[in-house]
Length: 250
Image 1 (tube, one colour):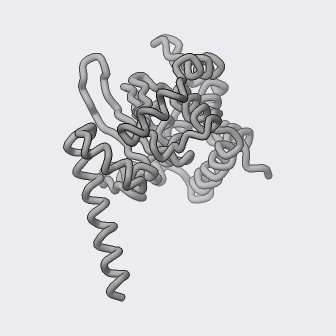
Image 2 (cartoon, one colour; image 1 turned 90 degrees about the vertical axis):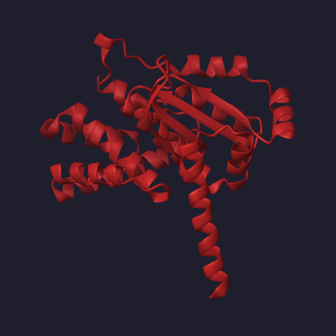
Image 3 (cartoon, one colour; image 1 turned 60 degrees about the vertical axis):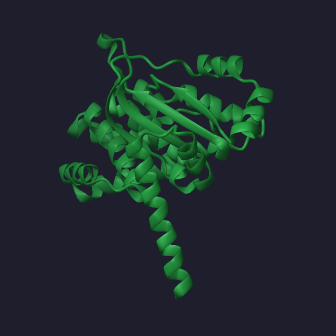
């Protein structure tokens, strides 16, 4: 058994025959997102939803979710630009054609990233401000962000100085983008929101951002973060400081 994209697709197909293809895919993505998010930013509602999803499946079936997550991690390590979840979503025919739900083709995302990429200005902004922001207010599965992330790495730009921001009205799309960026170690916040009406319904903060203390401090100092997110990041930082003090005393 090879833990790769085909394994994920075949396992989802097998479980989908019993539980429904779309529902199984959503359950897998949500469980990945909630488990990763709760490592550094515990949310009781997400924990309860995770437990609710797990109860739908037999134990051996739900154990396959962990194997698929392992396969996803291995696949993402092969290519910084690959959109594994988005590709599987489309290949299984789960996108909603009736609502015009289509993801931007990867080659188009790469082209747009190249058109907007300016290494000299990026380095200048990092030197002056300490970081740059890469944002997509209608991120879908996150391909625009992945393409830019890949381009930054190709040009030896330290991604610890890059703040990624994604947004989408679909919670599923937010979770797909979040999981992909989180597993790639990116410092990011993904907002579930109606960008046109400026209504926010939730958000996900990657562990990479929680652990990136220098970037967090710069974002807080610049006033870039909304109060609630700023508070959560500061609380996490205070907890880390407390743990460090306890270790020193020991």
